[in-house]
Length: 438
Image (cartoon, rainbow, N blue to C red):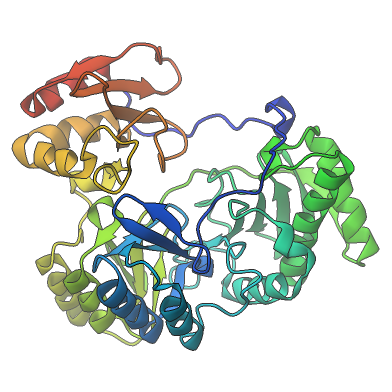
């Protein structure tokens, strides 16, 4: 059995299959809603996952007043509001604008930035990336060219701990131990070393170089990995743009790491909680806002970090108890930390099953699944069809609804035959099936 989850090998973009899109991406935003089976869907970009308490309250109000009442987290630390009524777009945009969640209508879908959620709250990072985050978002919203980015293009700001290293961001800036920073494109093995003060400006320049490369190649692509360029060619293009803007740089071997979210509980000067399947009920979200001091930080692992400046250990323990009481995960032993699912039925017409209900019922029914799952060390991801929307990057166990009913389980990991699948018709057999395939 695998002792722990390992990261999938990084694939250089030069080995990726070049893609030419015949249309813009269809990613929803707050101004362009997506029609789902359970109503309209809005995706609210939250750069770095950082929300003030007031902004969090506005999102809860919008979910209850206009949608299904729940707040849904994405794998990029953004928020989705589902079940929205027809014709509510103007009211939603008005609320979000008033709360400062929609600073630029022309850039609202391209404000995709993830940041190390514990940055500045413990001793593991080399610097606090919050100034980078603020500066990059401001520069992004001021760039006319940036409006051409896809809604899927992703920036990552890593404070040096390496927690965002294998999230497959298009532009990654990582703080270095010597006070500088590394700028990397896609999964390239080389990075451009820059000063920390130049990091936000360099990240935007890299994104604009990507757009230039796409235009030069005459292709319409959404992500760096889709470019028909070798890694060194794109890195060279970015280097030339940095030089033109007076940003000093040099090539270096890129540092690696493993995407790993904060464990639930008290961590440094913060509390960390996880929400099963990334779906907050209104009471859970309201309790978060009551416990929060100043701000909340949503994570790419469908959790939330709550900074706790000036609190005592007893106060933090009491806050965790309140969050645990409303059903949030506050300790490291919950099997939910390794379980995820797409939206499934009734929200998606392509789904063959209500995967979230099935995942919940299965974990409730199988008392031993947690220990088996922890031994395998792999995320368990439930999907309503073969598209596997929202699945985690790297190694995992896929649980996919089958056309004939039931589910098929397979391991996506090095050393495993991905063609080998095991059927799951009886939820009580999950532990046995997991033991068989891992």
